[in-house]
Length: 104
Image (cartoon, rainbow, N blue to C red; front, side):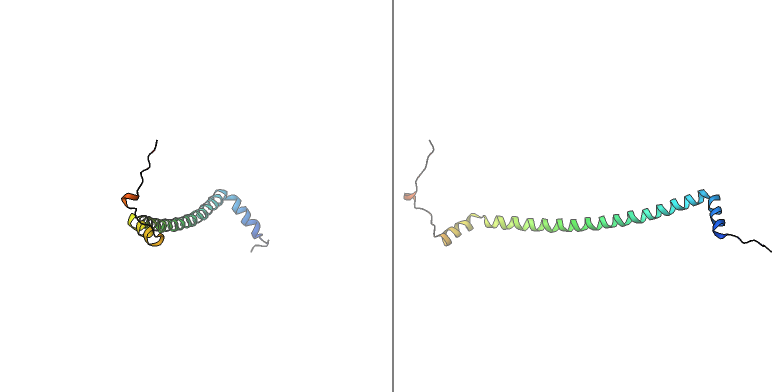
């Protein structure tokens, strides 16, 4: 029978010192695993943000096309002529009332 007491903390410490390389490799492996987790989470966040930005770009492209259509509709000569006639009371001058302006 063993008569002396064993200091467990001291024995663990001595055992760890005897196996320095295994301890170092274990710490490196755990650090690498944690780094993979952090990088994967960052990648997922960036991918999500990228998808949101692409959806926003699509929405803005559609809005831009609608605005171009609206602009072309508003700039049609027949529409401008109708607005000038109806809202401003303008009319095309008779040929006798036309005056030609020349540049010297």
